[in-house]
Length: 326
Ligand code: ACO
Image 1: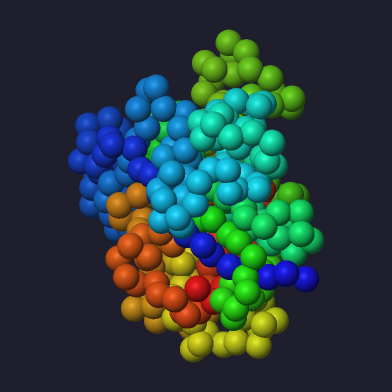
Image 2 (image 1 turned 30 degrees about the horizontal axis):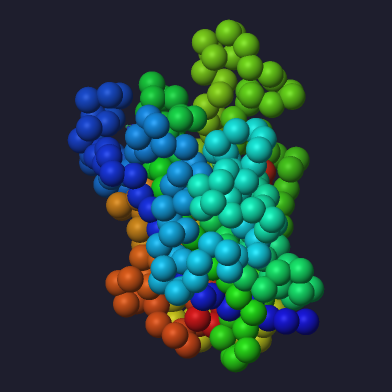
């Protein structure tokens, strides 16, 4: 079986920045509440004429340039998202159009905030079986289109953006070491966008009742997130024969700074080895991990040879973790 490693990363964040102080003027909230309860200070918001694939295309162009590749070098495009351009075609197919390539593999994955980890497992499968040599995996969201801007308990939490990682066959010691995935659909209603699918098709009523937006029981999600991010992290370490002490950088999903703090305490990773971007980007579901990996690369916090642990939890519920030699 062939292993895969990272060739390059890229990111795109929309120009408009919405601060906690801006939100104070929109709903009954405060910068102090948002900062202390979530760790978020500001988030990026897509322009009206931007769709999710537009964000991916910009992030992809950066990753291609950094990897010294052209769009024609990519054998497969996988986009992890819960906010696709259209129900179909997939966002990945719109990305093909944006990059002006055709003939390669292109599809989306929906595993909410765990989407990038799920997509990484699929990329490994494509490379291991020889179906593809070079795979572009994106996590991308425009959550601002699907939050209820009158609901202070959710609208302050999310942001828009896209992160891209290009994977390729590995011919050295670097690359994916182990990956662990899980899901529990029996309690999925705790975090849901109820309308817009076959269960509740779009109607005047669903729009009036704002059922096309995020509905979340935050406290419950919080508890499950801490438990499963811890479990996934420990499982992947244990299975691959490493310990928390071996990890050079932990790149967790960025949903809440308190979830991150509780997870690192339980896994045994020090704060100095934990990469945090939630203050600047907020929760950009499937995009937070590739965005944060890219941030770690460009700020020099992630270097060749480093052992990187990543874990996520999200709607579904879904969760996962991977361990990678950078
Ligand atoms: N500003 C001011 N007050 C607020 C706000 C706000 N923006 N939001 C809620 N409050 C109030 C509540 O009304 C409540 O007031 P009350 O005590 O008078 O009833 C109080 O603050 C406490 O509310 P809680 O919901 O208990 O606050 P908590 O500390 O749990 O924080 C939060 C809420 C931030 C949502 C937290 O539960 C959380 O982060 N949950 C996990 C989110 C997550 O991981 N999502 C998964 C990813 S999303 C995806 O997969 C698509």
